[in-house]
Image (cartoon, rainbow, N blue to C red; front, top):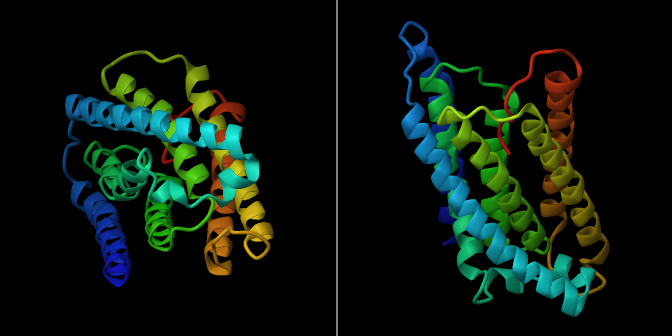
Length: 242
Protein backbone atom coordinates (compact mmCIF):
# COMPACT_ATOMS: atom_id res chain seq x y z
CA UNK A 1 0.00 0.00 0.00
CA UNK A 2 1.12 3.54 -0.70
CA UNK A 3 0.78 4.54 2.95
CA UNK A 4 3.24 1.80 3.89
CA UNK A 5 5.73 3.14 1.38
CA UNK A 6 5.36 6.64 2.82
CA UNK A 7 6.01 5.35 6.34
CA UNK A 8 8.95 3.26 5.10
CA UNK A 9 10.56 6.26 3.37
CA UNK A 10 10.51 8.31 6.58
CA UNK A 11 11.69 5.30 8.60
CA UNK A 12 14.66 4.80 6.27
CA UNK A 13 15.57 8.48 6.50
CA UNK A 14 15.21 8.52 10.29
CA UNK A 15 17.50 5.51 10.67
CA UNK A 16 19.92 7.03 8.20
CA UNK A 17 20.09 10.34 10.11
CA UNK A 18 20.63 8.42 13.36
CA UNK A 19 23.50 6.52 11.75
CA UNK A 20 25.09 9.65 10.27
CA UNK A 21 25.37 11.48 13.56
CA UNK A 22 25.58 8.46 15.86
CA UNK A 23 28.20 6.87 13.62
CA UNK A 24 30.37 9.96 13.59
CA UNK A 25 30.19 10.10 17.39
CA UNK A 26 31.05 6.38 17.62
CA UNK A 27 34.07 6.75 15.33
CA UNK A 28 35.40 9.90 16.98
CA UNK A 29 37.80 8.06 19.33
CA UNK A 30 38.38 5.07 17.05
CA UNK A 31 40.84 4.62 14.18
CA UNK A 32 39.47 5.06 10.69
CA UNK A 33 38.90 1.96 8.57
CA UNK A 34 40.54 1.55 5.16
CA UNK A 35 37.73 -0.19 3.20
CA UNK A 36 39.19 0.81 -0.18
CA UNK A 37 38.48 -2.53 -1.83
CA UNK A 38 34.85 -2.82 -0.59
CA UNK A 39 34.30 0.82 -1.59
CA UNK A 40 35.69 0.18 -5.07
CA UNK A 41 33.40 -2.83 -5.54
CA UNK A 42 30.41 -0.95 -4.10
CA UNK A 43 30.94 2.04 -6.37
CA UNK A 44 31.61 -0.15 -9.41
CA UNK A 45 28.36 -2.08 -8.90
CA UNK A 46 26.38 1.18 -8.65
CA UNK A 47 28.20 2.53 -11.71
CA UNK A 48 27.25 -0.54 -13.79
CA UNK A 49 23.65 -0.35 -12.52
CA UNK A 50 23.49 3.35 -13.43
CA UNK A 51 25.01 2.87 -16.89
CA UNK A 52 22.50 0.15 -17.82
CA UNK A 53 19.65 2.21 -16.34
CA UNK A 54 20.77 5.31 -18.26
CA UNK A 55 20.90 3.38 -21.54
CA UNK A 56 17.49 1.74 -21.08
CA UNK A 57 15.65 4.87 -19.94
CA UNK A 58 17.63 7.16 -22.26
CA UNK A 59 16.68 5.19 -25.37
CA UNK A 60 13.02 5.27 -24.31
CA UNK A 61 13.11 9.05 -23.78
CA UNK A 62 14.95 9.59 -27.07
CA UNK A 63 12.37 7.52 -28.93
CA UNK A 64 9.56 9.49 -27.27
CA UNK A 65 11.23 12.79 -28.16
CA UNK A 66 11.65 11.78 -31.82
CA UNK A 67 8.13 10.38 -32.25
CA UNK A 68 5.97 12.61 -30.03
CA UNK A 69 7.98 15.73 -29.20
CA UNK A 70 9.30 17.44 -26.07
CA UNK A 71 5.92 18.00 -24.42
CA UNK A 72 5.23 14.27 -24.41
CA UNK A 73 8.60 13.53 -22.77
CA UNK A 74 7.58 15.85 -19.93
CA UNK A 75 4.00 14.68 -19.57
CA UNK A 76 4.49 10.97 -20.25
CA UNK A 77 3.57 8.63 -17.39
CA UNK A 78 3.78 5.41 -19.40
CA UNK A 79 7.43 5.49 -18.31
CA UNK A 80 6.31 3.88 -15.06
CA UNK A 81 4.60 0.94 -16.80
CA UNK A 82 6.09 0.54 -20.30
CA UNK A 83 7.83 -2.84 -20.85
CA UNK A 84 11.25 -1.27 -21.45
CA UNK A 85 11.26 1.16 -18.51
CA UNK A 86 8.89 -0.35 -15.93
CA UNK A 87 11.67 -2.30 -14.17
CA UNK A 88 14.13 0.60 -14.33
CA UNK A 89 11.64 3.09 -12.88
CA UNK A 90 10.99 0.74 -9.96
CA UNK A 91 14.69 -0.13 -9.57
CA UNK A 92 15.57 3.58 -9.56
CA UNK A 93 13.12 4.24 -6.75
CA UNK A 94 14.29 1.32 -4.64
CA UNK A 95 17.97 2.15 -5.27
CA UNK A 96 17.69 5.34 -3.24
CA UNK A 97 17.68 3.20 -0.06
CA UNK A 98 20.90 1.19 -0.71
CA UNK A 99 22.57 4.37 -2.01
CA UNK A 100 22.50 5.58 1.59
CA UNK A 101 25.40 3.14 1.97
CA UNK A 102 27.65 5.79 0.38
CA UNK A 103 27.60 7.56 3.73
CA UNK A 104 28.56 4.40 5.64
CA UNK A 105 31.94 4.45 3.90
CA UNK A 106 32.44 8.15 4.60
CA UNK A 107 31.65 7.72 8.30
CA UNK A 108 33.72 4.56 8.82
CA UNK A 109 36.68 5.99 6.87
CA UNK A 110 36.33 9.24 8.87
CA UNK A 111 36.20 11.42 5.78
CA UNK A 112 34.72 14.90 5.71
CA UNK A 113 30.93 14.63 5.55
CA UNK A 114 29.43 17.79 4.11
CA UNK A 115 25.83 18.94 4.59
CA UNK A 116 25.12 18.59 0.86
CA UNK A 117 25.83 14.85 0.98
CA UNK A 118 23.42 13.71 3.69
CA UNK A 119 20.79 16.37 2.96
CA UNK A 120 20.74 15.23 -0.66
CA UNK A 121 20.41 11.53 0.20
CA UNK A 122 17.45 12.12 2.55
CA UNK A 123 15.50 14.50 0.31
CA UNK A 124 16.04 12.48 -2.89
CA UNK A 125 14.75 9.31 -1.24
CA UNK A 126 11.62 11.03 0.08
CA UNK A 127 10.82 12.88 -3.15
CA UNK A 128 11.52 9.86 -5.37
CA UNK A 129 9.36 7.46 -3.35
CA UNK A 130 6.42 9.87 -3.17
CA UNK A 131 6.71 10.75 -6.89
CA UNK A 132 6.78 7.08 -7.85
CA UNK A 133 3.75 6.43 -5.63
CA UNK A 134 1.79 9.19 -7.42
CA UNK A 135 3.34 8.41 -10.85
CA UNK A 136 3.63 12.08 -11.70
CA UNK A 137 4.67 13.69 -14.99
CA UNK A 138 8.35 14.56 -15.35
CA UNK A 139 9.57 11.31 -13.82
CA UNK A 140 11.13 10.11 -17.05
CA UNK A 141 13.39 13.16 -17.20
CA UNK A 142 14.31 13.02 -13.51
CA UNK A 143 15.25 9.33 -13.54
CA UNK A 144 17.10 9.36 -16.85
CA UNK A 145 19.19 12.40 -15.87
CA UNK A 146 20.00 10.90 -12.50
CA UNK A 147 21.02 7.56 -13.99
CA UNK A 148 23.32 9.37 -16.45
CA UNK A 149 25.00 11.56 -13.82
CA UNK A 150 25.39 8.60 -11.43
CA UNK A 151 27.09 6.64 -14.22
CA UNK A 152 29.88 9.22 -14.23
CA UNK A 153 29.93 9.80 -10.49
CA UNK A 154 30.13 6.19 -9.34
CA UNK A 155 32.70 5.36 -12.03
CA UNK A 156 34.76 8.22 -10.58
CA UNK A 157 34.33 6.92 -7.03
CA UNK A 158 35.29 3.38 -8.10
CA UNK A 159 38.42 4.61 -9.85
CA UNK A 160 39.46 6.74 -6.87
CA UNK A 161 38.89 3.88 -4.42
CA UNK A 162 40.94 1.57 -6.66
CA UNK A 163 43.86 3.98 -6.45
CA UNK A 164 43.57 5.37 -9.98
CA UNK A 165 44.68 8.99 -10.33
CA UNK A 166 41.71 10.68 -11.99
CA UNK A 167 42.46 14.03 -13.70
CA UNK A 168 40.97 16.96 -11.80
CA UNK A 169 38.90 18.18 -14.79
CA UNK A 170 36.88 14.94 -14.66
CA UNK A 171 35.64 15.81 -11.16
CA UNK A 172 34.78 19.30 -12.40
CA UNK A 173 32.79 17.84 -15.30
CA UNK A 174 30.78 15.65 -12.88
CA UNK A 175 29.87 18.60 -10.65
CA UNK A 176 29.02 20.70 -13.71
CA UNK A 177 26.75 17.86 -14.93
CA UNK A 178 25.08 17.82 -11.51
CA UNK A 179 24.44 21.58 -11.72
CA UNK A 180 23.03 21.18 -15.25
CA UNK A 181 20.78 18.39 -13.94
CA UNK A 182 19.32 20.77 -11.34
CA UNK A 183 18.69 23.48 -13.93
CA UNK A 184 16.97 20.96 -16.20
CA UNK A 185 14.98 19.55 -13.26
CA UNK A 186 13.62 23.03 -12.48
CA UNK A 187 12.84 23.58 -16.17
CA UNK A 188 10.91 20.30 -16.45
CA UNK A 189 8.95 21.09 -13.28
CA UNK A 190 8.10 24.50 -14.74
CA UNK A 191 6.62 22.83 -17.82
CA UNK A 192 4.76 20.28 -15.68
CA UNK A 193 3.18 23.13 -13.70
CA UNK A 194 2.29 24.94 -16.93
CA UNK A 195 0.73 21.91 -18.60
CA UNK A 196 -0.73 19.85 -15.75
CA UNK A 197 -4.19 21.45 -16.09
CA UNK A 198 -4.17 22.10 -19.82
CA UNK A 199 -3.21 18.68 -21.21
CA UNK A 200 -2.84 15.10 -20.02
CA UNK A 201 0.09 15.87 -17.73
CA UNK A 202 -0.81 14.39 -14.33
CA UNK A 203 0.83 15.94 -11.31
CA UNK A 204 -0.15 18.05 -8.33
CA UNK A 205 0.87 21.39 -6.90
CA UNK A 206 2.45 19.79 -3.82
CA UNK A 207 4.76 17.60 -5.89
CA UNK A 208 5.80 20.49 -8.14
CA UNK A 209 6.37 22.80 -5.16
CA UNK A 210 8.46 20.28 -3.17
CA UNK A 211 10.35 19.28 -6.30
CA UNK A 212 11.14 22.89 -7.19
CA UNK A 213 12.29 23.61 -3.62
CA UNK A 214 14.47 20.50 -3.68
CA UNK A 215 16.07 21.21 -7.06
CA UNK A 216 16.60 24.89 -6.23
CA UNK A 217 18.33 24.02 -2.95
CA UNK A 218 20.53 21.50 -4.81
CA UNK A 219 21.37 24.10 -7.44
CA UNK A 220 22.56 26.56 -4.80
CA UNK A 221 24.50 23.89 -2.85
CA UNK A 222 26.17 22.32 -5.89
CA UNK A 223 27.05 25.72 -7.37
CA UNK A 224 28.57 26.69 -4.01
CA UNK A 225 30.45 23.39 -3.87
CA UNK A 226 31.79 23.92 -7.40
CA UNK A 227 32.98 27.43 -6.56
CA UNK A 228 34.60 26.46 -3.26
CA UNK A 229 36.24 23.30 -4.64
CA UNK A 230 37.44 24.34 -8.08
CA UNK A 231 37.42 28.12 -8.39
CA UNK A 232 38.07 29.61 -4.96
CA UNK A 233 41.42 28.09 -4.10
CA UNK A 234 43.99 25.39 -4.85
CA UNK A 235 42.37 22.66 -2.75
CA UNK A 236 39.73 20.52 -4.44
CA UNK A 237 37.44 17.77 -3.28
CA UNK A 238 35.62 14.98 -4.97
CA UNK A 239 32.01 15.53 -5.97
CA UNK A 240 29.60 14.48 -3.25
CA UNK A 241 26.06 13.25 -3.30
CA UNK A 242 23.96 13.47 -6.42
